[in-house]
Length: 328
Image: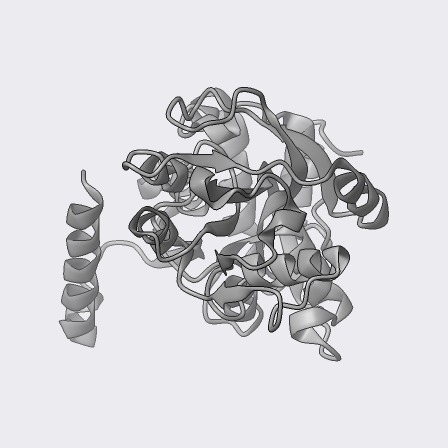
């Protein structure tokens, strides 16, 4: 299904649901709970859809339908789950760390009611640039027009942190663009920006789209010293390589050394224990099938499901993992 077709489908479903009366909504045989994800071109949406697919294979038994819901990403997902507006969400590990500690976006207001469910794939810090912009390192961003994602997004938070590490003043040294990341590939091809930041699992449709036009693009390799320093300083970050085999049209010839952050499925502390137990059970017991749902899941292991969740593990997840012998 094309992107345009998917957008029309989502709009149609949203319109249909909002127009239903309470009595017609009650006509469904089972209740529904949502997994807040990200934009529909990203891996968050694919991950939420994969988790829902595994769970919904036993829809009649559990009498609960899980649905992946598009969203603005980590920050809004954490807020919605913390405030009881959604049952589940997916977020970057560093966003959950800031929320737990009451730092950055949540300065002074620690979110203590978040619980980990599953550790998922890792997302890589990715800087996509036009070759003609002559950006061969992060330092080369000076004087360029750069998209960092929507205001308040984790992409923006991370980009601003890197600018600080580089000694770049966003107001004086750069022209900052804050358009949604799903628009970035088109903006790059149109010449409206020189580069864009995206922390994402690979492969991603965004880079495939960015590299399909006439303007040649590349993934910029960050300075190794900065990668190693941040890897040592922050527990939620890990040094890694972005494989380029997924993107035959980009200019890179070798994998890109960069930083990655884990994507984590989480929920509210009040989420029903049996619901979380069944969700985890179906993902783990259909693990091979789950990993086939997206190439970004290829390196996911049973150990990674249970480790480095940042926030405390939900009792439902803990109960299943203990029964499965993954926790003691």
